[in-house]
Length: 161
View 1 (cartoon, rainbow, N blue to C red):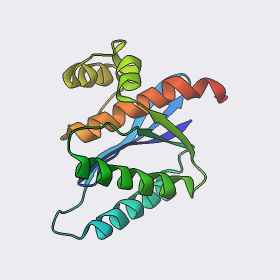
View 2: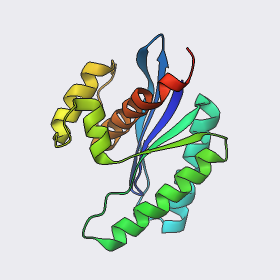
View 3: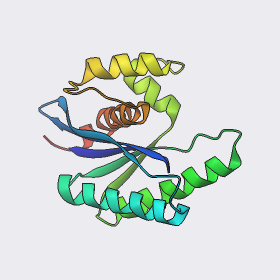
């Protein structure tokens, strides 16, 4: 089972590709895709969609795991992230990927066993659960890895090894 895991955003998109083989999770790829605030918003959405399509072609995942929208007080930001999520979901599902959405609470429970875990606790546990061979430079990238771990833990029993 191979998963394209996304921590959605419009300025920064956390990306990870994870695979589960022989009951062991492997991190194949991770990054933080960035768009410039100097670009028009529509162009930024297009860039995100193009990157998701490129990753789907390159890695050939079975599914997309994405974090559900977390509402904060800034409505403009929430709307932009919602639009970016829509582009991400469209781009991934147009390649036939199954969609798996997880709340921040579900991700924290899956990775740490505790729903009120801090970002630092999630990161520490994620790096214990899967070998990360490089320095992860952004929270968004680490969040994508945690989302991927959540997906592999929750959906892989349905798929034969």
